[in-house]
Length: 249
Ligand code: NDP
Ligand code: 8X3
Picture 1 (spheres, rainbow, N blue to C red):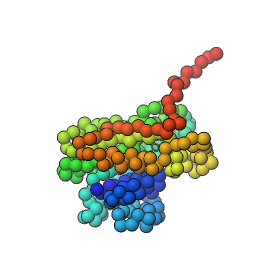
Picture 2 (cartoon, rainbow, N blue to C red):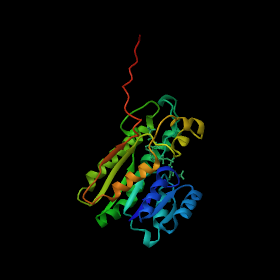
Picture 3 (cartoon, rainbow, N blue to C red):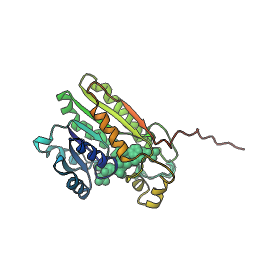
Picture 4 (cartoon, helix red, strand yellow):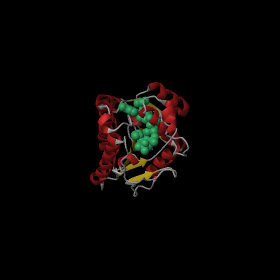
């Protein structure tokens, strides 16, 4: 299979690239940081092809896809993994620029990638699109505001893809993890405050990027008649909380 992974310069994306390559597949690794792509490419060899691409930039997507060598053009699996959270402040204190960036990356970028790659899958009658949602897309929490809303968008877009793709042979999945450590997610969210980022995982046994990669690999390699519509996964130490009630007593 040829797998296209967005956001392969770190975290889940890099782990997924390793998993697919170790299992004999070819992987297009993409992201904005070329040095990271080059070092992953040096590690994984000829089974990967680095593609510098910013999902928020439609011209960058088009140039990257148009420029693929013929032997890399037939993409079997698209993993829309690139994404980020910015900030944990309440809505009334949050930065509108941060909100715009999350919407541009997690929603508009994911949609643009899908629209660019889906037609060839439909034409061939096969393919799998795996979108990275989050537990935040279904369960609100303080400070989640626009991040959670973008991931709700990812889930609903994925389910609507399912509605459009019935009968085409193309599959779509919303993969929604909870607390996952060992990636740059919290460092990005907390704007480089690495001490605060480390505290997010203190005293927990979080999911790992490899757990997510193994799940994505499982979804992509199921027999073609099976579509996992959505899958939510958490570490055992995470669960649901009570609804908040403000009492005047
Ligand atoms: P990381 O921060 O470790 O990796 C994010 C990746 O996204 C990087 O490779 C980054 O590459 C890429 N990216 C960000 N913006 C862009 C852009 N504009 N264009 C292209 N690539 C971009 O995060 P994780 O691996 O932890 O998260 C991956 C996905 O999983 C995200 O969508 C996240 O929301 C979701 N998720 C994460 C969870 C967690 O707890 N870690 C839990 C649930 C979901 P570069 O900067 O080089 O462009
Ligand atoms: C990341 C998981 O719980 O920080 O999507 O929102 S969480």
